[in-house]
Image (cartoon, rainbow, N blue to C red; front, side, top):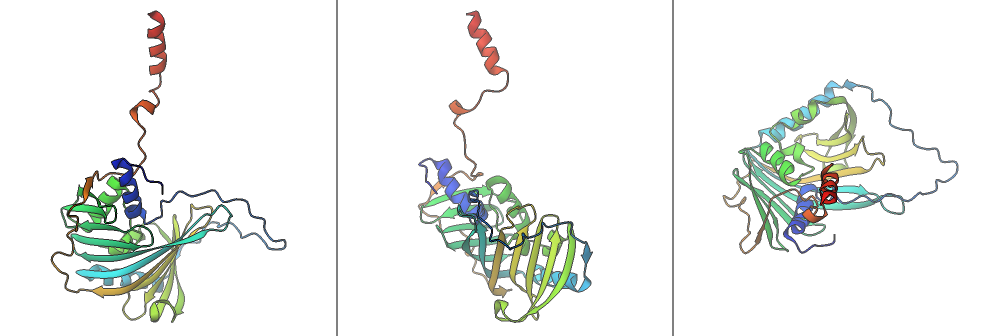
Length: 294
């Protein structure tokens, strides 16, 4: 990412890191790649057959209940996502997130790698986005719940975490509204170092597969393809180091921002200087008419 000297573009660097953990990187149009002869094209995804298999729904609800019942929790989320390359096949990027929360109003997300480090803190009143290497900090007012803070962070500064569905007050309720298909796949003894139950769920927007611990009902992996993505790029999240209902230090949600330069807590959208903005419709004509009469 090319850096700009202004505060606004400093926020772009910070906001883009925190907002989407790299998901908002500009996509390059893939170059045409020749297809080997004799290899059939993958069929287009058609209309999804609806159906909610009870066993699969029960597993999703059990995982949701386990997470929602935890007063506090911490876990590690390693998020890998594909991004188009100029050669055609996508490249894979990964981002590590160290997550800690305390219900109903405390959240901390530390992103140490890959890419520049960044941190997010929410203490029930304020949310703080912090870039430790650049010593930049953005602070904004926040609602009194984690769910509200996540929405406010996205609406005001484009900050989004791919694991948000796991930390809201009702994880199943967050995805249930537009579920079209849910079915049980089977068990795995490979993912997460334990036995997991595999479930697929489909909505109007996503096709996802989740691995849920057979004994503890904790999610160990989620793999998703977004249905409006013509490239069918894959997003993968590995979840580990789960700790539920553990004691958390009182200062865990206080951002260590001493000496950092304050910047605006706002969306990292490019801003067009006033002198370069196009004139409103009709204004130019009126100005020409006025000039002509002089």
